[in-house]
Image (cartoon, rainbow, N blue to C red; front, side, top):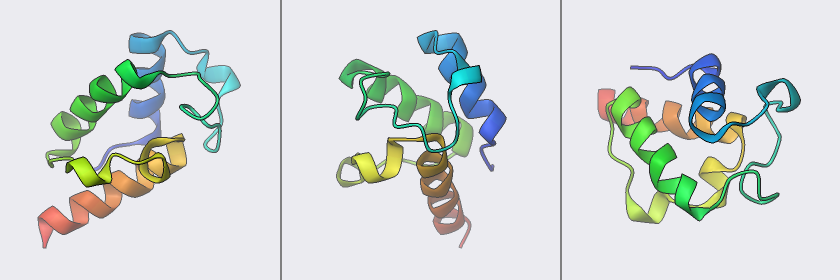
Length: 84
């Protein structure tokens, strides 16, 4: 199941209290400290549950989860891999 931009933004708002009006697709979430390392596990569980895929330990890197666009790209790749 594809994960949408709106789902991610709503999740960030609801679970981490981020002002999603100030977040665009390229806003760095972890690199800037908007989210901390404890948020990673929570976000990864959200992705696994909503995308119906498993996040592998070696995939937990900033390049995959540091912004909304990176999260969307990562989730899309994972979902496409599972579907094939």
